[in-house]
Picture (cartoon, rainbow, N blue to C red):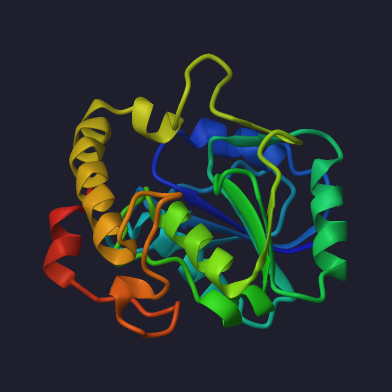
Length: 234
C-alpha cells in the first residue's frame, strides 16, 4: 500500500486521470494539488480516496510536493507523480515493497517525474527547494545533489515501470500542451539554471560547493526570495 500519493496538476486533466487509473495497488490518501486553481474534481469512476489542496495561485512542482508531505506528516513514507506519468501494471507494488523495508534514508525515483521517499531522507536533506527553483526545473538536480552529499540511498528507476508523456512527444506534456506556459518556462528555466550555478558552483555533475552557496549551512537551507518567486510565476 502507498501511504500518500501526491499529484501536482496544472493542466491536462485527461493525463491526470490516466495516471490515477494506472494506480493498481491500494493508496491510503491521494492528494491532488490543483495548481490550475480551477476547482477540478476527478471523475466518480476513479475509486481512490482523493483529497485536494487548492492554492490561490500555482505553487509550483516542488511547492506541491512539499505541501502534500506537510499535510500528511504522520505518513510512513510519501510518493508523488507528475500528471503526465503512467505506471505499468505491477510496478507500484515493487516500489511499495522496497519503501516498506527501507531502514536508511531512501528515495526511489523515475527522473523526479515520480518519486517515493521516507522520513529519514527528509531528515537528512529537507524538502524540495521551492524558493530557489520555482516553479520547476533544477529542483530535481538540487535534490539529487543534496542526497548525494548526505549519503542518501538514491535509487534511479527511470527505465522501469512507467511512461512519461503521451508516447508521441518528448518532454513535459504540461509545458508542451500550452504555448503560454512554454513561453514562461523558457524564461524561468534560464533563470533557474543560473541559480543552480550560484547555489552549487557548477552545472549538474560538476558541482564544487558541498554546502548551499558555499555557506557552511545545512543541506536543507534555502533562501526565501519573494520578488524572485513573483518574477517566475507562470
